Length: 528
Image (cartoon, rainbow, N blue to C red; front, side):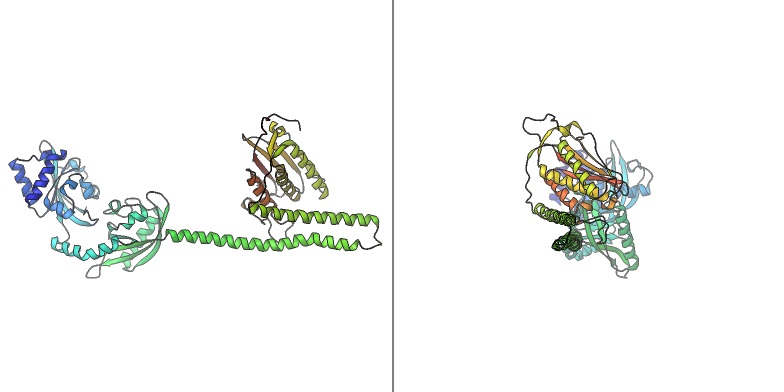
């Protein structure tokens, strides 16, 4: 007792808050000694809610040293004080003239809370003070001690549990939360303990509704309940997925007195599940596309092969007219070229996928490449008997006539693929070519058509290998569906990109953009 008084009074003399209690004044000594003999928890608080004196019972019951309590406010001990006071008094608490009694929870240092009945009285002299005299409502110290000892094993287990364990009373007030809560969610026990569910806004609205509803069901039915819950991490904001089991607590007459929520962190399982779903989808899609590819390539390769074999056999006929012989040879030549181009596309895509594409650098003029492409498209239309479709090459920006450095072989390959698509899917109207340099340091080729267009839902997938707008074997257009995929991968390898704007039945414009590179000492325009 004497040691406690010396410690307390030495601190009172040093702390600025305790200038109200000067050592050596017999009246003050008698006053503080009297308060220390009380079996009730007594705290003296100034008008700013600072604790300026705790009696011995307060220190022992709450588990704090006098120094710790003197550095705290009444809100640190009773987080629901303001709420409970406002519910019982329309005045600001520091303006209340009379004493009043409030029911609240006090927080103990070891994370537990217990209910108290607090009588608050004000005292005014040169300063204004408030006496908080709290009565333990846990049926006395003896019952409290019995409860404390009976819970020691429980506390030891739950504090070392890898799962979050939270206890709620019948009003959904958190009366206990273990240390795993902060480790998993970032929310500490100090934030949650003593607060009603939803008061601290830890859960999104939909998840808060789910939690409240399930707590209510458990309290009403007396049966356990399991569900999943998701909340944002306090520090990272990333979603934390929890599997929650709520069980009821009963008293000696089997009446529900509260609930215990045990939450297991399943974030890793959820993430792996999502990864497995994505992997499963990709595997199924890959399998489907491979099956389609095999069926498609079988059809596409068989057609020119049959033509070559059949026409070659017909050439053996000695009675064949010279003009017929020339026609058959021409058809064999076209079928052979079609077959070669098809195989080259497949091999080129395989090389790019394996990272073996070789990038060459040589000087070129964009305008010259595009003029060649213009002539190529005219030949394609003539071959396809689509002479009624117009082709126009618009005026180019001045950058189109500059000398650049790049891989002309692959640039032409990309443009040939885009041009081939425009010719294949256009049946009326016109095909337009152009060059512009709207973005500094970037050259953009574009090929626009008035063809069938591409639905918005297909505009991203058409750059995947073996994907076509119409993937059925009875589709109206031939091809393996690797042209755009190959073009996009070549563009990426060159440091560029391919984008498009398209509307069904109106047409499509493909943009092939490349970063520009000038030969050393030459950035001037060159006549094309």
